[in-house]
Length: 414
Image 1: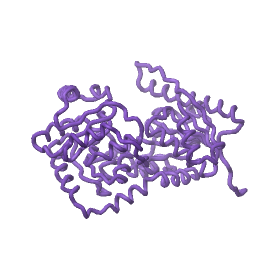
Image 2 (image 1 turned 45 degrees about the vertical axis):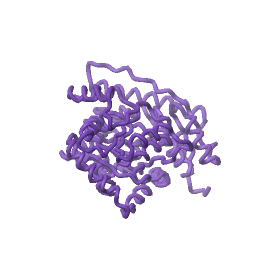
Image 3 (image 1 turned 90 degrees about the vertical axis):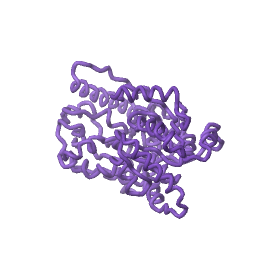
Image 4 (image 1 turned 90 degrees about the horizontal axis):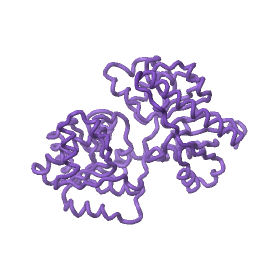
């Protein structure tokens, strides 16, 4: 390595490394190493990340320090929301500063930079920067996965206003904060203006490998669909538009029998608390117990990413009616790779990307008749044997793991 390159020790912190969080940790650690730096990996279970680095970058294995740390939960107070949020933020800054000090003592090296993956647990309003720095002395960067407010309040000009102490992104103004990264190109420039520093755009990559063996219940889906167009979603929760999915399946049972619906994955029990309409809550309860004949229902967390991809690849139409999901979704990267069509909400980041790249059709949330009409158009689109997939290939290339690695290296040079 040439003498003018300074090797840094960069720590990555994630409170819990399940699902896509694990993938982000793996690829971020890999990006740090490929940029010529030493890495420190801090999360609740580092073993999968160790295995990943050993498999993909065995020559860099000794450049990573792994530290297992179980996040200490915060005991909330109920009598003041604002004070509770402040104390919760302090709790998190403080505990991870102590963890970093412990790691520094262990490796006998100074940590130059910290990348905070789950930045939401550290942010709050009404915290002076000087107070935050009392509890966290390190230079840091933030991976901001869900900057929802920048889209929720876009119509009132939030992206054209500078961050203030009463705003959730105020701590990004700290001189200790060396940069922020987002996955939503629709908020990158707005956040950059608000905090007056570089905001990097990261590709929303997704692993696309398939399992080596057949999965029995996937064969069941194909058999029971019996030639019908399969409309599917993975994960049953309120924010993923699941209530609309149930209503659409029921609506199509008689009016559009050419469609077969698949609802699978983890059923989030808190969906009933999130649904404000009791009629809708009762509808979901009943459907859960007695799914319609045109629906395949299977609950349970999918075992791994290859299984997820195999199920995903079974669908003809991906249902992404996300009325309450404002941010990017790496499911579109899978859409691009597996060349699927999408029915998406006509708003927010997912809707914009579906329109821009020609991935399918969009419709209004809660308008079941319109959604059914768009399904018919999508089914017709699937019959076009001469359809171009150039934009699909462009999207996948721009959101590949290779593109993510390149973006991490650029981000670290900020």
